[in-house]
Length: 339
Length: 230
Ligand code: B12
Image 1: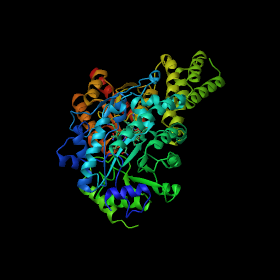
Image 2: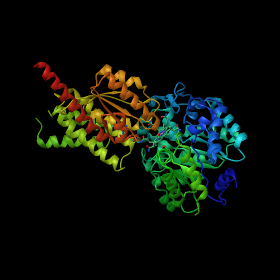
Image 3: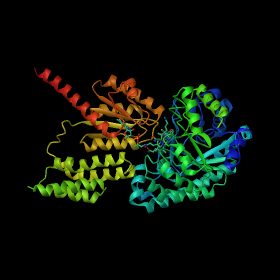
Image 4: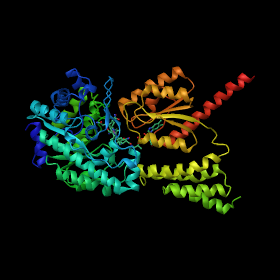
């Protein structure tokens, strides 16, 4: 069974020999960039470089997927936001939104550009997915991600306004989230056409660190449902933080798998959802994988599997500066695990 | 002069307006407080701020989340705007000024905004540079405003290293300024290593430390002045 088969069988609910070790979020490493002689800042705008960087984690470490893009700006950029890729920087800076679309409540009546999927880096992403497929698409699972509607709203408008209006004028925010759901569906549609094996919806802005379960259910869940109805390839819903309170709502969204991070007690999640539901998680991609020792990594990864994760998967983007030995320790632990 | 009873009632009204994020009531109660002759200081600290302290507790207990916190802050600012001009002497022990921002490459500003709010509440003059702030801008703004304190926030491991650059630069240009850092990846260890004067894990502790730092800074300045006078 190769990596791609293992991941696809897992999504299909079939038997697998062991939990796969993969991710639906960014997992480019500085080791990978070094092997390609590429700078991080350059990878965001060049299809060949992005594809090569995305595939390098599989090639170097046997991580069982390749995921692009690496930043959270694709949809917002296509909607008309300006982004900053810090082209001058030698550091690992992730692209950010430089100019938002909505600066105050009065500007909330926005429209989806009719040529949305031709704008910004959406076409580039389709090309990247094609390139990765041709390169390693038979061996490793090829994934991409879109933002959840609330997180995307936080990219196109001031977050303070979004948070406050979610309370004061939920109808107005609901309308915006509805429109942004259509944006997300269109972008995900392009990725599907380009041939991705699975798509992760990242609703990290709606973490319980920031937003109450009540608001999550009443304001966000309806639009997540709308999105998952339209995604035809295997899919995952990721939310950061202590998510056990909203796990039932996450399942209600219609997603195939839920992804939780290290702050969440995943053994408890497993109890809540029963043996069949796909739960991905939940090691700390910085404090364990990057800053930890190989020993800490082995015990953490073992605990994830003991706690009942269906796939060993990070709590967020893998932080690029993972030492090679740490990555190898993780892969070994998963390969040698016996339940 | 207001009766004790009326006074108590008004303080309670101010406090509840903040807790229930009711801007209109906060304004109304602030005006009432002034018209009954209550000390503005009293209304601010025993009314509005006392409400905000309770909000902080509710936030930590996960009864309130970030949106509620922001709305409570709006109610507090609404009352504060009315009361501030009538404050005779802002007597907090210290009166400080602070430059605050999230460092370059980092757009995480929820935590920074909460810390900023605490400084506003305590009567500090706050120069908020926002998020993704170019590193030299912190130094330039400190020099421009001669602030007592510079507060840096970072939520990512990489952007955190930018703090060290700001600290080094500030130290050479202005050895007297106090520097405080915070954000999820930051710890006391990091603060020591980078040479910051302070670190706090949350907004309430940030304010406590800041007040201590500014007080010691003021004391130092006074001593220098006193020596000069002799
Ligand atoms: C919400 C969020 C976002 C939002 C941010 C919206 C915004 N405007 O702030 C969005 C979706 C935009 C986002 C984007 C990204 N994010 Co993010 N995000 C988070 C999340 C889930 C919550 C942060 C938060 O607001 N917490 C709530 C506030 C109240 O807490 P706080 O910030 O810690 O603040 C408190 C204290 O730290 C302290 N404090 C804060 N500042 C200061 C300053 C001083 C002076 C003092 C004394 C105290 C102090 O007081 C505050 C109040 O008590 C965290 C995970 C987490 N749970 O921390 C990830 C997290 C910070 N993000 C992460 C990542 C990787 C990213 C991205 C790079 C993803 C990507 N692929 O592009 C981008 C970054 C883009 C960029 N270049 O900046 C990682 C960082 C990893 C690392 N170790 O470096 C985290 C830790 C997630 C993870 N588990 O891996 N993110």
